[in-house]
Image (cartoon, rainbow, N blue to C red; front, side, top):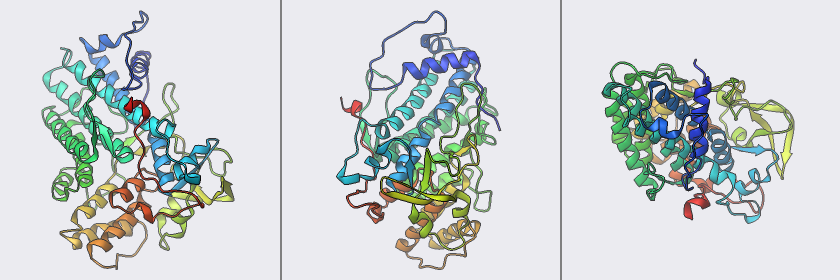
Length: 438
């Protein structure tokens, strides 16, 4: 598996892009540094190496905010607790003593900023492609297909936390409006279709390497990732018929390896960073503690509990909260994090079939149950019962993976969550950052 390895030139350009374009709601002053290439140099007459450096920056940026988004939403969805030095992780996110979420705290601002940094970098690449002769039209199509697919993916991540997003942000001086979830997802589908057209025109290979996309690193195989993301957008939109079509063109395989899929990768190389969701077992400092209900509600024999969590040698307590287990989801601090895997596609396939073909939905659900060491589903085949079963399988398949809060919100089941302490509240969406309202 490839890791991100940064040359001096890559570090220079990525530093320029990330720091100069930190927040879309800011006004940018033009600055020039004679000791390193300017952003203008990348936008006008970019070389192949500069284009590829931008790809590295985009792909690296996709990892930004992943750990925070996962623990913030996981806390609100009563999957886990983040026990560390910041009291907001066990206070604000659980609505302690009637508290409200703050639109200017890290849990509201960090994910928004990180996703838009990545989108901005992708837009820089698209603009650079319009102003360079360093690559052929076919090669440029590959870059565009990659960039547009990433933009769509990042917008979905924003919808999951905020229920809305700005789609048009290519011009920082004239940002588009913040759109409602349904409108964002409609535009995401269009962006993905445009990206697919680019990928179709890109020939047999990319002019750039990708890290973590082993098996998805050519235009044709990356197209399968594109269609997987499209299936997610369509399911979230409620368009189940078209979602089945997207799944058929993705890497979905009902009988295939459930772990297959592109991943965020990490390393200890200079300029790179590590997996922020890895935690040392029995550490008394920064910890991801499993919500007790995840253990108590599991079906006997569910291997996912054993595979994802581990009992601590001593139970831990903070702010009136407690837990006997902690995460062991990742073996090391450079273990990869799935972007999307076949296991998710199988459950998307089940969800898409529930209203019209419950037999097929149960078939897909049983693939997941069997892989977890559970017997075949024996409950009712009504839509309501199958949705409950689907959500339960998603709960255990995707624990601590930024799914639970949004799953409950989109099915109107957030209020089914337990209240951990008297005075706590249930939140299922983050406020848009204060700077976006100024």
